Length: 246
Image (cartoon, rainbow, N blue to C red):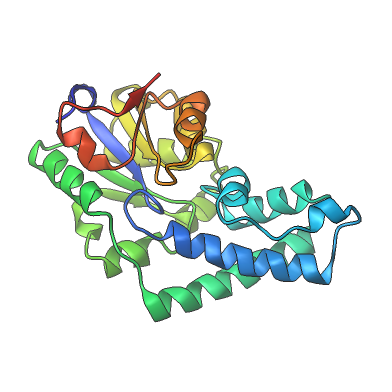
């Protein structure tokens, strides 16, 4: 296992895009919901009427955030006043679309992540899964990996506890608390810019960025937000190779 992981006492994994290959389904649902809203309520500036981009807009505005925070951030970026009722309507539309897609197509787990999780379990490392999504428990159960984690903090728990969304570190700090390990002795694994920033703000000992997009600047963006190391697949951390470091 990579030396950096041997130096932490516990690890918190984000869910969408890290454990489960569900980020694409989220992005597709957001695109349908946002594009419908832009068509019905076009921004005054024609340049802001372009469709939602499933790569750039998703990574910048909604990835890793709660549904309401993501909807508000994107609408504001297009010059549309994110009134609470509007934000809620767009978020609920996205939720319906994602749920329909999940029931129809399902999701897979990333094999490299499962390999790393099993290796950490063999080393008796406490593990938690965390997600801003209320679907996290269902996703982990459907893919057969829920039992690999000692704790789960999902969007439902975050709402119940009043946890602030990413880039605030509340979600990860609660996961570390449930593992009984201080943030300064715990690692965080994230693929979202907001999530990486949350790990850094929370004072976690190690922040690992996962660059699933593989774009020309995505690894650099993760490093700028606070990742200590960036990998394309978590199986890389089973070898001496540790990805791109800052």
